Image 1 (tube, rainbow, N blue to C red):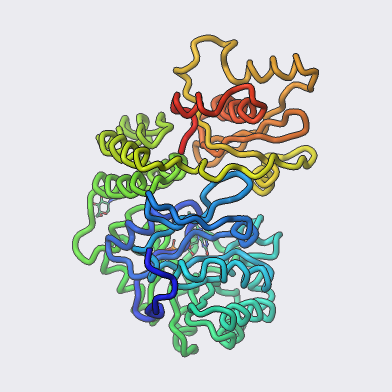
Image 2: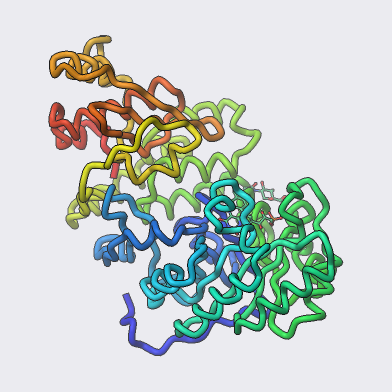
Length: 462
Ligand SMILES: Cc1cc2nc3c(=O)[nH]c(=O)nc-3n(C[C@H](O)[C@H](O)[C@H](O)COP(=O)(O)O)c2cc1C
Ligand SMILES: *[C@@H]1O[C@H](CO)[C@@H](O)[C@H](O)[C@H]1NC(C)=O
């Protein structure tokens, strides 16, 4: 890692091709892949301020990364490395100027820029006053941005969506630009418009002509299938730079200045980085799924959907040898995976728990990354759920109750036992397995199972 005190080039946003912020897609391996292929700047997925504030910063000597690790559950919230330091922009989700600045200061020496997300229409963000909620409060947003601009040595940007009226949009842009931001990224759809709606390129053009700071055009993926399309989008919008989300999610080689690459190559390039940076199997799987898309229905795709560990995923593309060798190399160097930071405490109970709120309440759940490997159990009574049920009976507690969420074709569960919640952060391919995974985590926390035996059996994942 380069010393934080070394003078660093200030990030310039003009005339750039940029990987857009994407939740779960924009983690380190995908960002590095985009840079390898030719992206100039990469944005992280949106990181929520209070989640980052709960992290400790660790320099990982084995992986050669800087990790921000959640003190309460040991998960890696943000992982970065020297190779991207001068080109990575961390996108913040925040609704509070003080908190935003505190987080930004925390990560300032590890990233090249800070972006404030003002375009996210997800219910979770808007209810929390973050994301698109800020579009309706230009003065507040501009105040938050000014605080960041004045308090940081690195440039600050924001990412917005257009408003239904052009005049209002231009006015909003003026207010935001007056905060001293270095550039503004604009998605040419309103909060209520969906990806299938046409992007309002003419509004982007007006904004670009109106502002003196670089405007970064976004929202063009429906029309971006190859390199030339990026330049056409840039021309149509008169914007200084282009930011790409979905086209890159599906085919990251869109950033290459020469020909694009076959899917298999893109997946293999991605998997190598996922292994090199010990990316979680669930995140890796999610990203590969979004490259494969319809091909998930193919025989290879079906084989892929069966996988649970990084090694199993790699095996589908004949990279399991590479994965094993790398894992072994890291182990020899003393890398323990994410469990180097032990969870600080068991969660505090909040009553009930609907599926919808599972993710948002994650702070109350004691999480481990535990895969349920079906072939390790030969009879019904040895299954984690059965063992947990027996434990509750013999300790005169209520029977365990499970809540499961699913995203795409993957599942995660939380189990409530004796007033506490336990869950596995590993995405399983069905509800039953997700429940077994949560039960395993609970059994570990209760001391019924020794986590060491799970690590040995490969259930507990780094
Ligand atoms: C999977 C996915 C995750 C996204 N996550 C974020 C995010 O974390 N922050 C954000 O500002 N926008 C997010 N977006 C929106 C994109 O950054 C972008 O504005 C939108 O997809 C339009 O650009 P495109 O046409 O190039 O896809 C996300 C989009 C996708 C498809
Ligand atoms: C990327 O696009 C090229 C050109 O259309 C195509 O041949 C290739 O299979 C695509 N790769 C992925 C990962 O979809």
